Structure formats: C-alpha cells, structure tokens
Amino acid sequence: MQLQARDIEAAIPLWPQLAGSVPRIINYSENHTFRFDKAGGASYTLRVHRPDYQSIANIESELAWLAALRRDTGLPIPEPVAGRNGELLQGFLAPDGALRQAVLFRFLAGHEPSPDSGLLGLFGRLGNYAARMHEHATHWQRPAAFTRQSWSAGNILDSDGLWGDWRIAPGVTADIRSLLDRLDAALRRRLAAYGLGAGRYGLIHADMRLGNLLVDGDDVSLIDFDDCGFCWFTYDFAAAISFHETHATVPALKAAWLESYQAVRPLDKDDIASIDDMIMLRRMALLAWIGSHAETDLAQTHMAGFAAGTAELAEYYLGDAIGR
Image 1 (cartoon, rainbow, N blue to C red):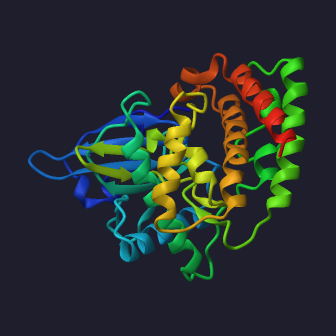
Image 2 (image 1 turned 90 degrees about the vertical axis):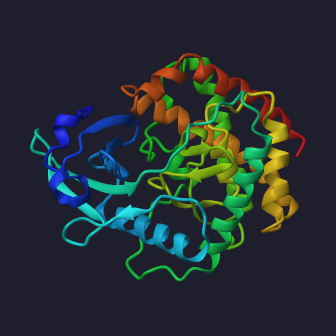
C-alpha cells in the first residue's frame, strides 16, 4: 500500500521538531520517504518502513552503525533525530491499523546523479567512501544485540530470497530461465570458492546506487542504509552501477572506483576478479526485486527488457568465466 501524507498524521507528534510542518512524499521504493520543511527553519526527511521487511532489531542495528560511522569516520551520511521520548526509532498506527516504524533524519541537500552526467569523479569518491566504511566495519566492535541480514548467494538466488524469486520476475521466459539457471549455478560455485574470509566479507552498505547519492555542488552524501548487511565488500561496487550494468562507461567507472578504494584499502587479484561475479549477483537481486516490487515507479521504470538484458550479461559472463 502506498502511503500519502494524510496517512502519517499520527507520526508527526512523535517529533517536536515537526510541529506545524506539512509532509510531502518524495520517494516510494522499499520504504516511503516524506519531506518536512518548517517555515524559516530546518528541513527533515521521515523514513516510514515497509511492513515485514526489517525487524525492529535490524533497524536499531542499522542506526547503531550509522552512529558509529558518524563518530569514527566523518563520512557524509544521514543523521537520525531522536523523538520526543528520546528514541530514534518510533512506531505509529497507520489508518489501516498497521503499526509502522519510522525514523526521522536531518535533511540533506542534493540531487540524484544521472548515468550520463560524467561519473568518473563521483565513482572515485564512492570508492573512497566504500573503503572507509569497510575498514571501519572490519575493526568496529558491534553491539551484542547487533543483527543484520546476510546478502549471501543463497539469500539472493534462492526461490525465497530476500528480494523475491528471480524465476518469476517479468520477462523471464523459458529460454531466459534456462540461461539464468546456469548463471545461478556458476555464481554459487564461484562465490563458494571465493569464500567468506574476514578481509573480503563483512558489513557493507549494500545499496550504493545512484538513487542513494545526493550531489550538491562538490558535496556527495550517501543515504539510505536500510539494506546494509553482511556481504562481500566488492558487492558495493556492483550496487553502485545498479540498473546501469550495460552502460558503456562501466569499465572506466570500475577503474576509478578501484583506484580510490585501494588508496585506502588494498585488494588482491581474487578480490578484483570477484567484481564481475558481484555485478551478476546484484543483477539477479535486482531482477527478483523488480518482480516483487512491481508496484513501485522504480521497478516500472526498469522492468521492460530487464530480464532479457540480464540474459545478455549472463551469456557474456558465462563465456568469459569459461576462460577463468
């Protein structure tokens, strides 16, 4: 169900900062995001969580990592705002009777970059951001109750995957299904061989796509940690090119990302080789997501031809993988 501004009236009194302001929806994807502007004052964004996606413990763990990253790294990431009761995570009853969870953030200025806007410098910045986050995650002592999902091969590719079943996504014909079944098997095999070593697998953002970047002049903010979880570190590059894996600039963007990443956190040859596996794993995750979130504008924007494009990428990947 897509919420409207009137559906979150019960949430507004939970934060004294929102008194007298009127919400307007600015995004509906996994969650709903509303913007509040106070006359002559500060602006805020309210994230209203999708029911039955992240648990309360998962959301609180995300907020714990955000706080640690803000404290320890200085990365330009969202700042949550505590409610009237001092808690960051608030619950309210929507008009349909469902209990919704919500988090308020201080507004960050900027716009989503376009894939055709010249992204080399931006991807240099993203490589730096990713390396600093991964370095932090490797050494951070997580709270005892910390819990986040694992973006493992099984949790993405299985029929009951975290984002749905790619096999029933729009456009998956019998021929495409046969090819993607081979891709599925190859990914599982290669990622099992790559392994879950502490230097290559850990806590990551997991959704550093263009839609989660805000560019404001020379400033680039990284938002929406809602999908952060445990995965291979190089998956953060694959997520950065989400929905644009076939764009002609991808090799140059990869080189820019790697150069800035390795200036902070060196990778070995197996790590670098794994990027191709991550691109295909992410593409399969997105294929499943489009099927399970078909009501969203984002899914509808990319739905046409996405399964066929995934098959084309799979043909190249499987042909190339034979030589590896």
